[in-house]
Image (cartoon, rainbow over all chains, first blue to last red; front, side, top):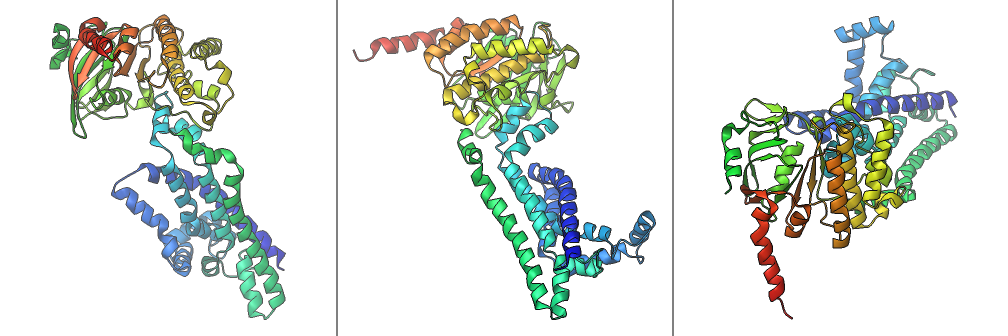
Length: 228
Length: 275
């Protein structure tokens, strides 16, 4: 069992989830409230990692972060080293790759909040920021949980982007899924099995959280009849 | 049509607004099959917008609140222009000196009754006049006891009956309107918009509530525009009545003038009924 890889994976997943929630909340709110061609365009871009092979995203990020392009050279000057094949580069890649998993549950949650509640708050003098913080977000908190858990789990399990962008550097870019691949290549099936079981544990716990928590908090179920 | 209406119906009524006009509305708006074409001025502390279902009452209220952008026309509150399509002015709802409650009580499910009632406290359009905390607590207590919801303080919306929700919803708007104006200064006070505020209440409760609410709002110099299709309610409020039908204002004046015949007709129907 590669504990260095486990620790790295956890850091990557926590970092990605924290940064993505900050990005995804306003983005999802804008998509949920917006309309027209601009919204369709942004929604398509956000959903792109769902349908693209991870290697495609990884390849272009590798080029963009490397010394061959102007942005890559700029990043090198800012960070003092190439972002590719580093933890920072992995973080950027994970954020882009997991973007749809953070944004889409939130968009669905925000769209499900009855417009009447938003108008009720505005009719009492609340500005849009207050309406969002005190009415929309608490009413969509189940979606917030789903978004965080899906982002975390998805980052733990990612493989293609990490391999393209980070390679396989112990302590810097070797995550659990890469470690598993390595162990199988080496023919060490017993260690591979332990690593795979840890990944299965993560996924199962995440799904249990999503499905179990809302049913444990009874108030969520009763919110539906408050609307009328 | 009364002379009063004729004078306020002129398109140039905005420029010749008299100082006692609390609100001047002159809007056109197409909503579904109804083409709304409403021009009127509020001058009395409590005005009732009266009309049958589907006559455009709620749309008028929503336009004043800022939830509907009228196709053309303008809405002016005191000295401030809230909407003027010609010059492109549109003040968003939360910046208007207007407080609203919808016909359906939308209590925030994640808050207690008390948190709901104080939600709009002190969100003043004129921050320099925001009342002190002591005043606000006093007002909240007074309104909660007036609406007989003080025993529900810690309940959640899902634990309330329909009538209780309705009372909390109206109380919440009343508290917000009163505290918006600050410590009782008259001019620029928040206009309170109530869409069928007593519709879910039984007559005994309504009787108790109407007089107390009217007295309270007068004392805090908070003007009201409420919507009803109930003749009895309009008379009980003893208010100025604007009658609307199929999107057009048909009459404005004291309740006896506008709805007197309506009341006689209803009373004769009661007398003629099976014995």
